Image (tube, rainbow, N blue to C red; front, side, top):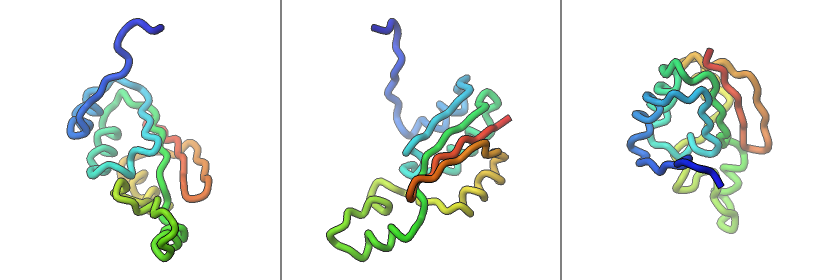
Length: 121
């Protein structure tokens, strides 16, 4: 239905280079940041790319559910599963927003997940 190549598979090791070189105005990492082994490098690349105006993320928060999942063998360990390299707190989010000059323009929390819209202008 669409002419052209709109989806491109890339190696995760190339993500910083891709972000550094993108001319995109909006970056979305819904359910991504917590899986990366180098989130600080990624955030720095986003912060330093002057083309990027907005950054949207959805990330899991460290919460009581983490302890509940660890204490109950019958519960799936969703937050600290092998795929999540990081969990975030409201304080750690505030810290990286300050460090990388991100200005939050909106947020929505549902349980232990937080969605944030960030303005880089």
